[in-house]
Length: 416
Image (tube, rainbow, N blue to C red):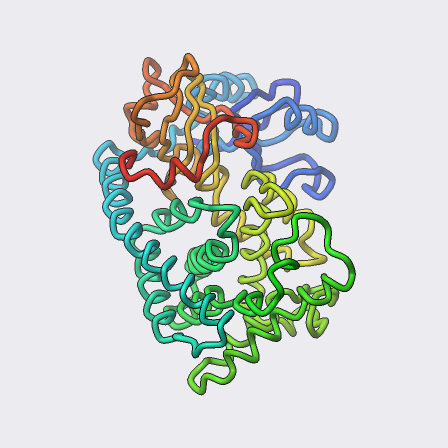
């Protein structure tokens, strides 16, 4: 009989082991989710402080750690460890090709959506009539793209600019919401309502004076009260459209509500905030805190997810945040990572069948020199699992401490 997890004393823990169970409740620790890939000394120290032993998931641990797990399994008189099924070379190549093909479609759609949002925001500023029919068409195309290959649009969502925050933010919240909604098994109609509300959620900001909207420093109490008018402003504009669905209006008006009742404009609590609006709220905050804005620099995706998990229960439904974290994965798209070989790259896509072995765009070689043309490799391909060629993610790198400009990498047509 074969097993897929091994009991390990905390003194035996090593980098690359995936801890799936503890000898105590997870709530007794500071970890983000119930399941942790050990990547740092801090992870190791936390387990050693709080536990006597843990259980390691063999399938989700790094390939390089499996000989050690085999040894520990024997030492503990447990049964033989089954080697998890690996992605075949053919399937890995198909997934990479599918992503690259969809990216060509997604780039055109992304450009078209950007032009539309820019025009929409200008129309709001000028008091012109709003073209929401085009918004519906674009959301339908985005939903179809995400269904074909969810990571293509997510990759493009990292083409951010501090100076064009509102435009890119509206687009990114739409992309993230549709991607997240799909993992929650929302039907096509719900996805399109969600996407439309997310795309239009911040149009009311165009009625906020620019000197307040783009203020680089802290807002005064009076200025913040003006900012807080934007959900109702957007709602009042859109409700004049006779065919605007109630679910979309709800998202626009209530995306700053929080389940503890401390949001605005109406102080709604818990289940009084509907699911589509809650989804938009989660992805809205995630994109906001990972983006460079006039008054702060964005933080890396993993740090953002840790913060949001800490805020859940008070600001967001805890289960919904956990589902969002699972949706983005251990290495969210756009994460800068260092491999065991010393190469530095960016996560561009990941298969649901191989979350620990994503597709990486290598930016720097093992000596730290930049490639003239970045190299795309799929770590899920069996070639990179062989001992002599082994490449795997060692840890996430803080892109703010790197000389790599992620937005420029994503914008480049040549690299993918």
